[in-house]
Amino acid sequence: MTGMAIGLIERDRARLWHPYAPASPDLPLWEVEAASGVRLRLRGEDGSRHDVIDAMSSWWAAIHGYRNPVLDAAAKRQLESFSHVMFGGLTHAPAVELAERLVDMAPSAPGQPGLERVFLADSGSVAVEVALKLAVQFQTASGHPRRQRFLSIRGGYHGDTFAAMGVCDPVDGMHTAFPGLLADNVFAPRPPAAASATPETVQEWAADLADIAAAHSGELAAIIVEPVLQGAGGMHIYPAECLTALRQLADRHGLLLIFDEIATGFGRTGELFAADHAGVVPDIMCVGKALTGGYLTLAAMLCTADVASTVSNGKAGALLHGPTFMGNPLACAVANASLGILDDGKWRADVARIGAGLETGLAPALDVEAVRDVRTIGAVGVIELHDAVDVTAVTAAAIRHGVWVRPFRNLVYTMPPYTSTAADIEQITAGMTAAVAEVHGRVPARSGEAA
Ligand SMILES: *Cc1c(COP(=O)(O)O)cnc(C)c1O
Image 1: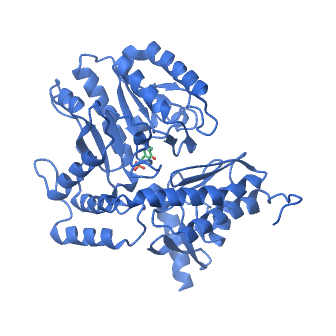
Image 2: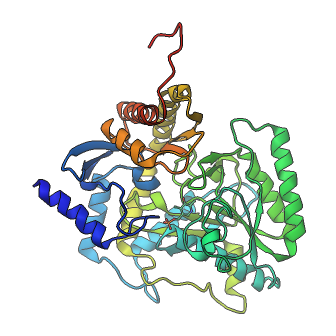
Image 3: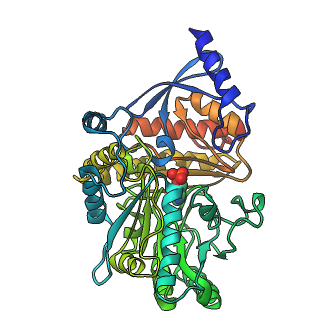
């Protein structure tokens, strides 16, 4: 049996690419033999088996855990009906129900137009592409054909396709690898960190942003940001008041406001959407990742009725996008089941409970000299090191402690499934802290303190 697992990983190395990896990487790979609840059963190249808690929720997606009976049943039910049909000229109940659900739950506020129109896309990056296209089409249809650039903030991540890469952080993103191919967008400083921000620093940031927007307003179509929490660009948490400043700025200059809620959506930060922390409604919103509870790839772009009708009445007469697998019924059916689980609002207590557990459990990591900061928001916990994480060593150490993490740059972070128990969260936080301490320096002994 051992030979089979070794064989599989060797076959993988001979043929496959993995995310952001060279071909045939000399990096460890783990075979997933089974996944159930919050746990993965991994098999290493040496045939060793490890039962680990997935502290990553498969990159923000598996919020209800693996083999979830409600999601399994929804997938089987749809499978017995039909798995896919084209969406050009045809429609089906799973897509219509999903659009209605998304509109119902989307951010809303008195006196602000709501998000009423839904475009279903295959992945987060594609949803961002569609949002950016829509914004440009909106400006053209509104008589502003020169408004074709985007204003974003540094430290952002919006996906890996070309337009999406073009609004990612220009230094840490992939701009240098594709000079000349990425749009020349406008970047403002990243907002101050929530933990140390004051009304004055928020105001200073907003003033800076206002100057930049004013200087470029004639050529900007939209502002795009990840609200409150920048994810893959550095796990940066910033004050919700900044969203209010962005909304005002967009309105002042006739820009559309795009919120990329692909990571933050569906309760992760403690509100259903991060925009809800500020009561701000964007003109366009992108969701993905947890939309199907991590079962299938699906994303969506939502926009206001005004944006939809302006573009539809413009010269192009249509939103110029239409993926082959648009509105995949299987994915929509599972998404409906996943959003159905969120309907009773129990997620709110789960996220709060997990957040409290992460805060308590990760606090001891601050005693490790290599650790610069520990921070949490909702059901997200972050250990930031002074220097780059030894990803291979920390991943292996965490696995020994029964936890799956995927660190990047100087960050070891977790966003556990909402179904994680208190004991699961203790294991995650203890495992992360121990892995960092073992690889990057022990907890210094402090005199007069019990061990
Ligand atoms: C993951 C992510 C994306 C890209 O989504 P994919 O499904 O990987 O294409 C875009 N924006 C944010 C904020 C994300 O976290």
